[in-house]
Image 1 (spheres, rainbow over the protein chains, first blue to last red):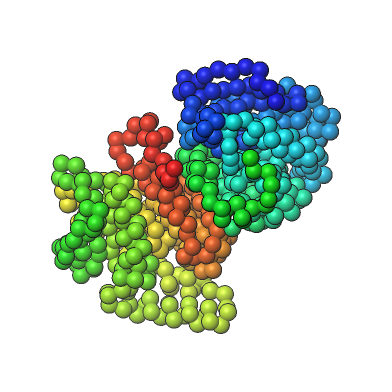
Image 2: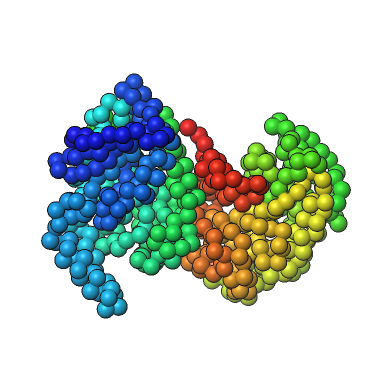
Length: 263
Length: 263
């Protein structure tokens, strides 16, 4: 990983663009972060829309995370933004558009083709990003995961022991295989659902919430469409991360988690 | 209304027991409340369990409300606690117990008998309590309604214009007639649902949430049974009332007042 640019935002937050094996990303750290006071990290998930187009929303979330004493980081998804187009994904997206334009139901095959290759590629990339980010002296742990394509968040919550809490957005198609993953998730979850999301099936989102194996999971449903998440929902999600990332961790916590990985 | 006893709790909160046309109740006011600085009011709904048995939970909610700068008050439900037994309700409760003991589904008739007479009597009593409480110089407005039998909260939200926000607990049977009321509710709502509530049908709770006419409504579902509402759910509900009852509101308020401020 190397940094390609850096600037200070007006609230003292350090924003650094980076590349990691050719993948572009951004890291935000609060002014307080240092080698002697390393901060927890929130990995911000992306949508296929891409880093540049999502930047205004991302920087708002990053400012909130840094105000709460956390670093925030994100990397571009495979086949999105400035990364090379990916035929598998392009075909799946074309099939999705055709189905939607024709007013047909979106088949399980389309949902799988749209999601599973993306999950299989994005999850190890996110883990590689954690390796690099957690090696920085000013970033410690634990790690939270927030937003983005929900199937990627679910898989990460299962396979990545450094992630101790996840805030997910029930806003995209979820293939059956990911429901199986969901049953294996045990970390605390905060799941946002837009009640009238035109791009998301409400019952499927409720079923996914039900499937999660976590003992602590919260569903927060608000009114409005896909992009209408109210500001106070961000406040409640921030409180969730504050509860789970900023308390002093006791040996008891570590005993409850998988060995290895923590920086 | 007259006060029958008063004491100061250790945090300076004034707790006064009261009777209002023979109905027992309690009023809690923060130390700051005065005629020159009247405070908003949260009316705490009760369960048929009664005031005395609910006191430990009530005083916890009242302490949170007063810490946020609000008065809190509650009055005993008809046929509950120390109030005279009410045959209509006693018969309905006996029918409910019989159905539950026999493992039979609870019929619409039982749900109606259990709920509608209670709503019809409790709602005007709550409105009378508001008349009396709001005539006190140290209590201004607006009024929030919190918890208790959800059907009472729904009806109050429709008929009582002084109530500007309601936090409801989807934890009891709701007759069809109340679904009709729900469509007429327009005030902001914060609805708590215990995902595995043994006394409550989840789908019915989701249907009721869907039925509310409010443009701003939030459903927060947490894991656990009827009495297992997690502490952070109380924090998020408190943030809801702070957003809607604290006046005057400035844009800073939304950003600055965070639930769960444990760092």
